[in-house]
Image (cartoon, helix red, strand yellow):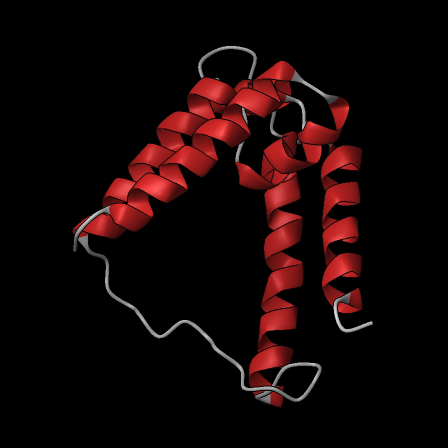
Length: 135
């Protein structure tokens, strides 16, 4: 019962990704192809997600604690540094090459897609490597 809110949120997120087609790498790469057959649907999905997040974030920050009454940990870093820029660049290149970002790739694992399996394996390897990086 303790993990039910996380399960429901994850299931809702996964269902939204499936319904919007964001688990299809071709849809994502079509969004990134601004000089060719550009598909703006990903921008609409992002705008919707940002709107929901903005409302939820304000409510959560105002409440000041988790649903279970625990301490709320909100981001405190506000500056842009080289680690942030490098991470954003690696994410962007990976997103453009593979057509996946972490959430849709994990949802796509259920399909047995080879590209999703390879992407998630590489993502996990990258997380392990980043955890071992000094600094």
